[in-house]
Length: 165
Image 1 (tube, one colour):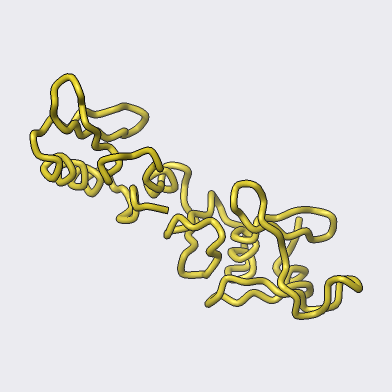
Image 2 (spheres, rainbow, N blue to C red):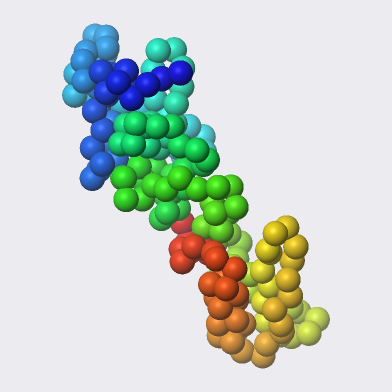
């Protein structure tokens, strides 16, 4: 397994920009100081080291702390390509799920709030421990959003949960 020592022999990481650069020349095509990595289809930066591909956000954790993350690395601002140190946190899958972006198809502007055509009301709900909890139906969208945001706080969701990516 890759160690912090080996990582630092090969790469330099800037916590303020989140970028990795090669410490030494890798080939005629990759010079010392060149940015490392390429983006995969999911939008994560990955870097090949010693014939193994690593996600850059996990390498950043190893680089700064000296340890591999215990769980998942959550990009707090939902931007998978933003590997700045203040934007990363070691999070359980539950904590990571409680900091998801709002779905693109969301029309209310708030995760867990939708227009119920039959009742002609705004419906608020939240998923907690795998179970959907109904929070109520409301004439005003703002009331449904307020109830949903209060529930997010009550159940320990991240303040960025439901923000646009």
